Image (cartoon, rainbow over the protein chains, first blue to last red):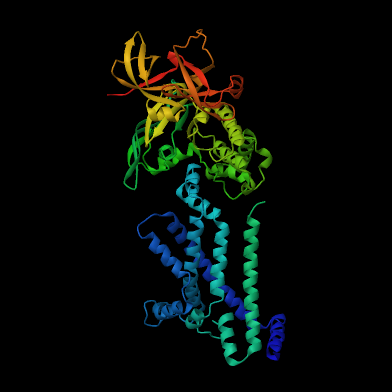
Length: 232
Length: 365
């Protein structure tokens, strides 16, 4: 019990004194997961909208695959990204294994199916005739797709939160492709694993408190946007 | 009305869905300032025809012409969609304010902010929705939402407006109010319109021409009075409210008058035909007159029969009387008349109708 108490006290001290290492780790976490989420938004919303609007044989199978991908185990993604980026792997020439770039790649692969799946569901959940109504208002195909995405913005923001939440908290892929190199590819989750392993519970508790605080802040911000967007 | 220029034409339009042909319209025409109603039961193909004419549904065969020019390329389809507006049964409003909803079509056309503001406020006035401009579309009642949807359609000043069962989901008073407003707006703006509805009264009230759609085909088209009183076949007759539709045999013919055998009675009607032919006898229930007691002889009606009332069904502004006089007849009377004549089930009355009130559909035999 004392261990936990001391851990929390130390954690608060670390946070309040703006410990440079803790700040560094936090900033990298935010940078890596934020970039990965942005990439996944671009890919996921485009692919999801196309998937929701297009009609082709095998659509159901593809949507099922995307939905399965929403639960992609990070360690599996980590393994395959490592194999691909390995020195003599297919993408070895990029030489980005054990860099933040590799972590962004792995996290984007984890988040994209989440955003895609939620986009498909959000767009399909709009009234069936809405697409026709927008076209009848004189919209071109591009305008129609853009208006539909705007119409689905509230559930899509939920997709952003799910995607970000999925990658900021994952550890398996980051540790495998980033290597947890101090001051370079160490993020909140990988650092927590390491400090716990070393028995440095105070540091581990500090890191996990920050992780939770970060998650909460980002989601609080997105929720504010989501709720404000709804006109009175 | 006939002299206005041709606006929209369809030729050999067919639409298939899942291998089944759901629309087959060899010829369709719409003139400027015309208000055409497409009436027919649910699933008859009215919406499919509207969507096809709006270039929102690709027909399997056929062509659509705007002012004589065929709409072919994707670009000409977009131009076509930009000169029309469409209102569906659901309001399909965007999750935004009423103002932004009405502005949607104008924004799509890249109009300037000040033009948009002027046009939106004008249109909101037109549909009596100006006070709700700033309200969220999600917080409107059904009638207000459909008004906003109408405003969004009229804001772009369309050359033609397509309305697909626009008021079906509304309660009767709201529906009436909106029908009246639509009638006024169409008259004031002179917009050409096509209205799909299964409500013949709405169609009668709004349209200058009526087309009856059934099984994906236009089975009859003409002025509303003609369709209502001279239906082309039994299906149309039943749909336009000809409650009395009976099969009869022509017994005799002379000078524009026919004698028909209907049940065990002979009936005199105006029309042409030859003895031995079968025909469908139609009479609107409001053209059947009832007399309690002795008919008294002084009537211009050619057909007077004694009948028994089998049921009296109150329908609000009128009562529906079911009669048996060797054949079955339905008559509409005001509740006051039902009271004054003491009409009730089992009562003996005399029914009469004029020879000219009967519409005959000749069937081939």
